Image 1 (cartoon, rainbow, N blue to C red):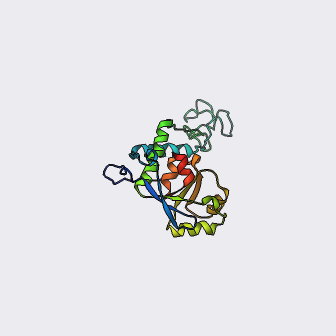
Image 2 (cartoon, rainbow, N blue to C red):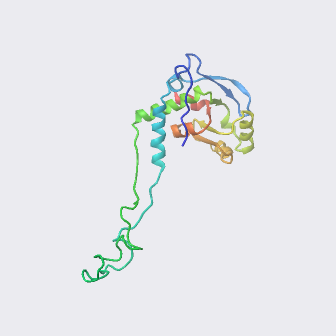
Image 3 (cartoon, one colour):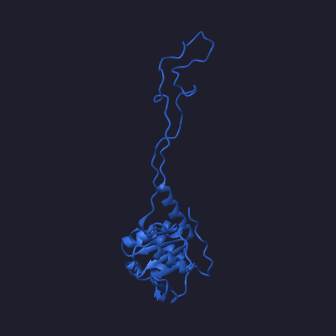
Length: 219
């Protein structure tokens, strides 16, 4: 589970007019700056909301499939194990009772579904908070020309090496098959289109690399 970083700024909010990030080409060369939308990257970070959003996401990923059998489900004779009286022993019914070895289990785990819900407004605000926290920590870079990727892992690995990045989430405006093919063999690096990003994926990666068209769509 990713940890929510403690933001150590005076008011947890970037100063007005400072919402800009450097832009790098596919070759790893700086090619200017890009001004981020304030309504997305300039929000005050609410760490409790981020923690709640991650908890909901992680819980909904879990599957509870453990299952035990009750005394009515285990295989065995259902005949009375011995007569009710006269044996000097406690009265018992079938051998499948939980007290006997091989009998059923009382109150054991059963398959169940656990689903937590987060209101749409809170989910949207948590996503904005996650993006804003990445900007405050200076973990956002813009990339241009990603659509020209050849699909070769070496090309993307060279870009990440020049930027000194080992763990990153690349966000694109739409699905790009060549870029996806280029990063799938690089550990710690994932790529998602803008419509599939969520709070968990943003926070669990160290760096956020965003294409220009994805930034335009965020507005």
